[in-house]
Amino acid sequence: MNIVLITGSAGLIGSESVNFFADKFDLVIGIDNNLRQYFFGADGNTEWNRDRLIDVYPNYKHYVADIRKTDELTPIFQKYGNDIKLIVHAAAQPSHDWAAREPFTDFSVNATGTLNLLEMNRLYCEKAVFIFTSTNKVYGDNPNYLPLVEKELRWEISEDHAYFKNGIDENLSIDHTKHSLFGASKVAADVLVQEYGRYFGMKTGVFRGGCLTGPNHSGAQLHGFLSYLMKCAITGNHYTIFGYKGKQVRDNIHSYDLVNMFWHYYQNPRSGEVYNAGGGRYANCSMLEAIQICEEITDKKMNFSYSDTNRIGDHIWYVSDVSKFKNHYPDWNYSYDLKTTLGQIHDSMTARLVATV
View 1 (cartoon, rainbow, N blue to C red):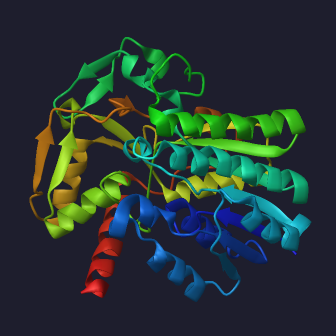
View 2: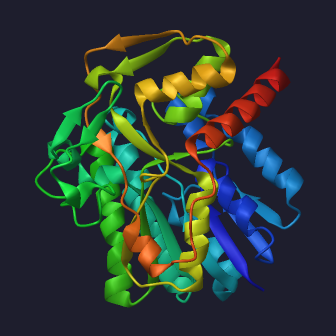
């Protein structure tokens, strides 16, 4: 039997992984205890997505387990053992603002949880491919010291620095910078995943995501940029832009495109490898530009205001250079541009909001 095990399976990337791999593996095991609701309240509740997966995929098996507890993970890995061919680790505490509230919780989920899963991988299914959803926050504030130029609606890299014309690559230092506690816990996990590949020779891959997005995101104010923005656009709820004149740039990769990267890596894994994984030059926008697109899709003016105080650890300009991954896996490419993605988010969000009335 061929099995894929997915953590955070009711979240954005986890559920997209279930969608993607359900017809490629005999059994899909999902691990998710809806901790996102604890982090972000009702907006973060993923039960609707868990129930959808159970209803849609007959070969999906859900476990309500805590990745911080080896006594809850061990029976699962013991039961399925070497039948597990792929592990997609997408469970996380994903907000740098929230991490400062409960540093122990943040670190235990992001770092200790990752270590627990790596050990489960090593002890019970060593030949399985292990894919880790990391973050661009491992680079800390270093992107903010790049030469930037202010444009009408966005910050942009200076044309005098051609090295960054395609975005930020994996050579940017992760040292000598402020990360936020979230960034620090993800650095710890990121390096652990690399080390299990390099030290033990396991098939581990790190994907440092930009803004991960898609129609199945339970977006909240502290996490889920495009999803929460569109929710405010639809409902008329107030949205606050924090700092940088609203011109801060994020690249946005559709969850399908990211999981498709996972699929290409799985078929030809490189031990301990690291890839930047975002929308790159194909799909990026500033806050102001994203608001404009949301207003076009909803045909409504957004209710938003501006705060001069930027969030600690926020990037002014971040665009992923995905050249390394494309060089290693030339058959991969993007499928969803920014407007298509926002259109999907709008339709999915509208349907969910109607269903709750």
